[in-house]
Length: 170
Image (cartoon, rainbow, N blue to C red; front, side, top):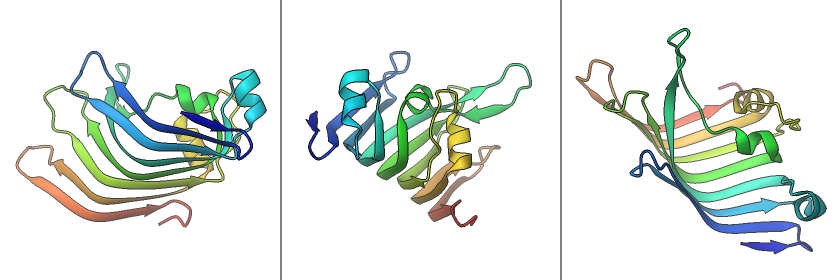
């Protein structure tokens, strides 16, 4: 970790995440930079406020959760970081994302080499969910491919070069 207060830059070489319940699901991020860091808030108040978060590469595991009340399912990321950090822009490059089903024996969906850009993110007040933040901001996602198995298990599907552009509503 390096903090350069003069350049308002905080860099982290890598972060590893380990789910102790599922040690095979090792997430990591490399080449993390916070640019335009509010160094006073960071040093004196332990607040992370920056113009931009850049991530060079990584691998993330996201598990599907099941709502017991209505049997709906959704993919969620731990929201603690997003509810406390104040970021205007997020740039994620070359990161593999594995979306795991709620059932342990289910087949995952893999997004290969995800590039994600989110800009004009709203100022966080500590109560914003990741979904609310993305709905209010402008974002683009590109992935080299999506791999998944059909619900009946008969087919493995591979889709290449997927582009989603919420900024232009494409």
